[in-house]
Length: 433
Image (cartoon, rainbow, N blue to C red; front, side, top):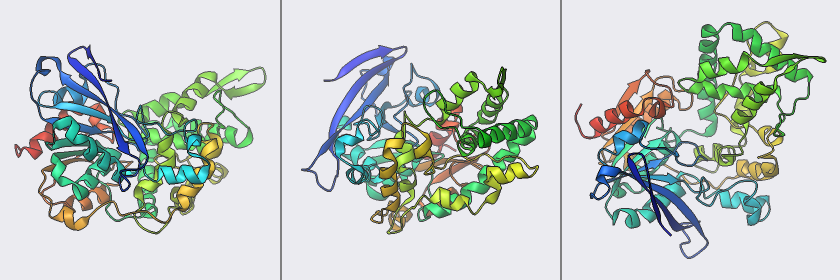
């Protein structure tokens, strides 16, 4: 059943679709997809071109906007927008510790989740496009992992696209996960150094917290085991425009005096559990490294293995000296499945995904080199999440792609400066700049 309703300035319609779990077996099992159609109130009766938005992640449902903020307001000037919950997220047959046991044991769960990468997401888009547009091609806006999906779209089904807009999401076409993380750790180290240069008082604060966690067992109110490594992973904040300030505010109220001595404050623990829990987006942890897999090589917990090549990230070694504690971020580790109650039941499933050797290639370099779809990409200088050198190498491979390289925004630029970012990309694909 379709439901249509209003918010300030927009008309919304809930849309649901049935697609194959495995598009190579169209007569087999199906799953449900959910998407929210958005159109400006004053244009609700007009025949407008479509823009489908693919959220970053993997594992996050589409934005739940109220009204027409940020990039959405700009898009609604000329498009109907489809905010798609990618498979396994939001209302699209969610995959999590509660639902995955319906599949069976860890082996069955891992086989199921192998169908939740960019290739399946793009085939979902092509499966539902005729019902949405009547068969006409549409524009795709891909943020971060959504950009990975957009590049796969250009590789597999460019006939479905009038244009592709990518923000912080140009993937390497051929890098193994190990290559991705070898490039990532030095970027993260630079972000941490920049944070400490802005907030030098945080050097001692972070060391004190890590030392406390190395010598105490701390369980957060939601059951999360807060270890020194888990604390370090809060560096994921440093990839966002306001992240350095958010991390600073978090650290400044970490401890409180009690009759038993200094303890981590309830307020600090409450904030930390919200930042570290994967309860709302477990697919991010489960298939994150699989998003880089394209051949017979397993990912084999790549971020954890590669981290050993960068001993400066070892908390105990840092505290044994007088140097700063380094934060991490944008990486998934096996210990997360021990610490996080939302992930614990899925540890064996995650291990099996890390061992898989039957991944298919995601990108077709020859087809991208012959591309004739207008493409524009925002590339953020020294992006913590997506390596800039990898992104620019891919940009040079895709025929006709126009880049906007900027240090005005971090990885979340489409949120922080959404209207300006989308304005610039639309101008590039319309050949206005």
